[in-house]
Image (tube, rainbow, N blue to C red; front, side, top):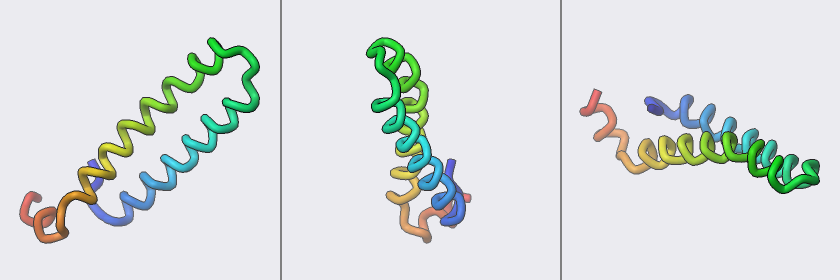
Length: 68
């Protein structure tokens, strides 16, 4: 779970790197099945991290402080 703005930045940077890896795979992998096998883990991690980002951003800082 993302606890502060620094962790948010790290998560967003990691999401961007994972997205770049998937974009590279789309162009580098010639076999469709291999692409899907290779990309599925990256895409699942992107989805998980985006959910954490959304949850963090949905809370006002005052709400986040009161929940700790």
